[in-house]
Image (cartoon, rainbow, N blue to C red; front, side, top):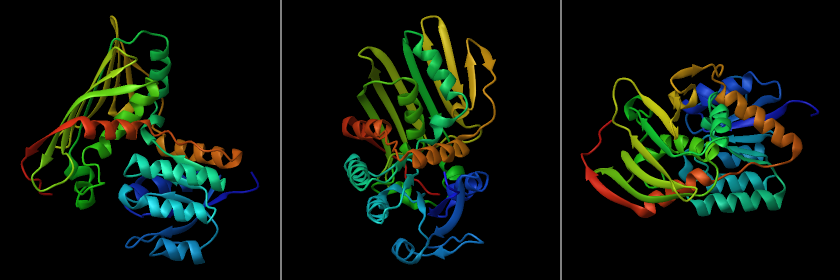
Length: 308
């Protein structure tokens, strides 16, 4: 690699400030070249309030897209047409059709496209994948419960069509699931609790099946106060593996395994640098497909209105 890769962060919100900007600053393979946001600004670099002016007048830089998913397809296609390598926050788009269009455009243009799933890079995930690969799995259960007011304060877009609702965090669990248990996963039934003043679910329960017979379940809820729960429990006969704290903690048969420190976003940027250098792409969409299938097979249940 000739030098640091110039990169522009598009969408300067909480996730960009908490994760993307520190990861870029700590990675010698990248140089923050610009920021694009209607409201937020980043000191020390050119700031643009709209994406079109950045592509027209800004530096030639790769794009790290951190906007809500419902507005991404036009931005992605514009970046690709301008020849920019592109990294997309999860979920990569609002629909399967949109992300498929983005993937096809990137391939035709020859740019690098990285559809990220940051939870796959949690420190316990790869060890869990290796453990599962050596065993016959008999059951897997996901419990992903958190407080929406703590993690998404004032973000009305999550309750609108294309905003994903509780699947915004839930898809993190599904990204781990599809990584540690590769192969077809079929949604058999789903129940989606939708607040009376929203269009997206605040809770969802899924019943699924993997490898033709392995029962899977997922319990997603955005109403949990106090301690938060991000756990995946795996059984292989009498053996039991547990991932907690979103994959940061790993327990096997009741014994804690040392998996090292959290490095999700730094690892994402290392992966992006590798892809740019090799002129390759990484665009797995299997977690998004499960969300789409859950919505297609789901039974909606009305619940109380949500007020932030």
